[in-house]
Amino acid sequence: MKLLKLTYLLIALVFFSCKNEPYEEIPTQAAGEYQNVPLSFEVPSNFPPLQYDIENNPPTETGFELGRRLFYEGRMASDNIVACGFCHIQEFAFTHHTHIVSHGVDGALGSRNAQPLQNLAFQNEFNWDGAAIHLDMQPIIPITNEVEMNESFTSIIAKLQAHPDYPRLFREAFENGEINSENILKALSQFMVMMVSSNSKYDKFRRNEGNVTLTANELQGMELFNQKCASCHAGELFTDQTYRNNGLAIDPQYNDIGRERVTGFPEDRYKFKVPNLRNVEVTFPYMHDGRFANLEAVLEHYRSGIQDTENVDESLRQTDGTLGIPMTDEEKARIIDFLKTLTDTDFIFDQRFSEF
Ligand code: HEC
Ligand code: HEC
Image (cartoon, rainbow, N blue to C red; front, side):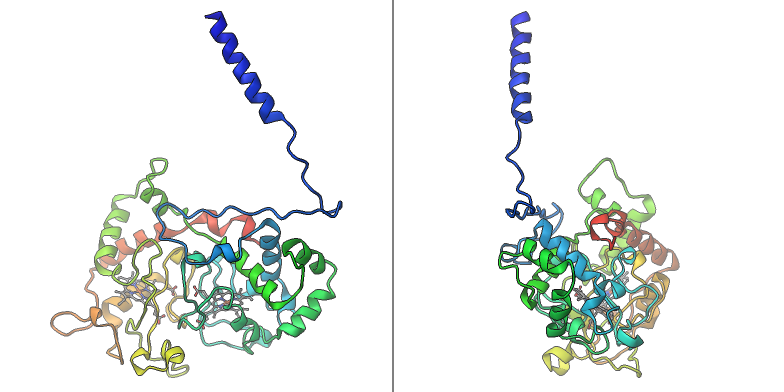
């Protein structure tokens, strides 16, 4: 018995002494031998496969940090104010809270509502109409758009080169250390790829974590959602990533033709990307033009507001030809109860993604 105890003690000692052995000395920047530390990216177990080509641009500590700085950097815009984070506000899952359509430099009005930024690494196409087909390319649109940041890369690069911190941050983040458009876009992607929202009450329930259960109302709402909404808002991302017309009345002010703008096909007129619904409780106002202030209005649209416009999704038509998704008041309320289980406070308050 004593011998056994001693053996345990010895094993424990050996183990401990191994653990306490000094690590290889971490190279310091001061010594000129800075080494970039890769960040680990894990696909949540209930999620579909990753779409972003992470091997081509693996997030690292310094690349991510540079991306974060650039995301909140006013110098990325012509007025030195309108940073990405100006329109994409973390507490609202990176949407432009209270703004029906976003406004950019000099208060110029855009025509669309800012989308949430979350789980972007699981998507292939971006924007309401799919105008961007790679995450690394997406930021070129807001940066150069005259009603958003209205800036050019030449000018941004000059501003960053003259800044006290950026030359060092680029050297730390990228092997060639250059301040160029490629590295700016790569750093922004490293930051955005890490923005994974997968810790809502719903996720914990799905993964059977820590006895998290949904209430009877939420469960009933999930059931109803699966019957009435999940044909488009499908799977764990709550979008099948297709473009559809969900029957919104045409807004004469913008007459936004949606997907047709990208493809040129009349059969894509008024179709918009099916939005993911994670954190939907905080991403109001809703739809591509922010026309609905709250979820009650959204549900009422699906029940009674669907218009017979060009290319309206046929799945929204009942067998008797009327448009709409039949729901009682009670059912609408239960679906909203369920949608609120998609709020992920870990994500919207995650310090890693905040400005300061
Ligand atoms: C003036 C407000 C504004 C600014 C500034 C802005 N965005 Fe956006 N963002 C939007 C709007 C509006 C959309 C939807 C655009 C569309 O569909 O045409 C959007 C869409 C996106 C999307 C697509 C999300 C998806 O799910 O498809 C990404 C990614 C994005 N923005 C990242 C950025 C980055 C990075 C920056 C800074 C370089 C930035 N945005 C600056 C308003 C803004
Ligand atoms: C036929 C496909 C389809 C069905 C079915 C459907 N939706 Fe949608 N949903 C869409 C599309 C497309 C949009 C974006 C439309 C736009 O902005 O032009 C959207 C937008 C939304 C939005 C706004 C999200 C945002 O970020 O602005 C919410 C919320 C929503 N749907 C909830 C639901 C609920 C709840 C149901 C079931 C009662 C449902 N949807 C059924 C296709 C669908």
